Image 1: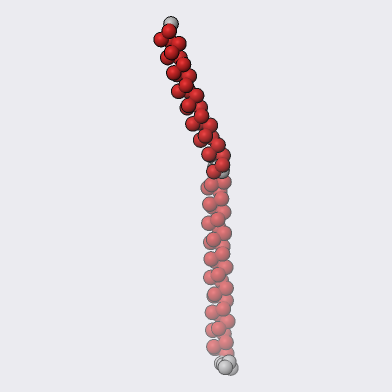
Image 2: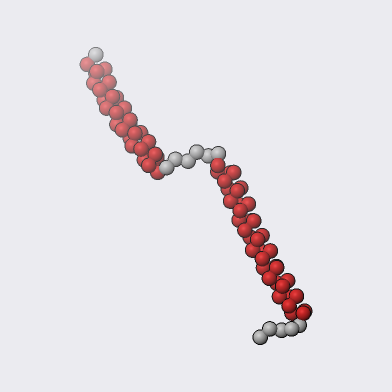
Length: 80
């Protein structure tokens, strides 16, 4: 049931406009926050998990090789 009262019609229009304005403000705030986040973290270099794991494996292998070389050097020094 609709009212023919222009005061109620104007009030309804005002409320619809306010709701649209608040929704727009929310979208703008979200977009601005997203842009600030991109600016803050955009210059940082992040690696993928696969790249991290590959380097981690290479470092472990290098540590093992160093330990082996230390043992060989200790044997050679003991002979000499």
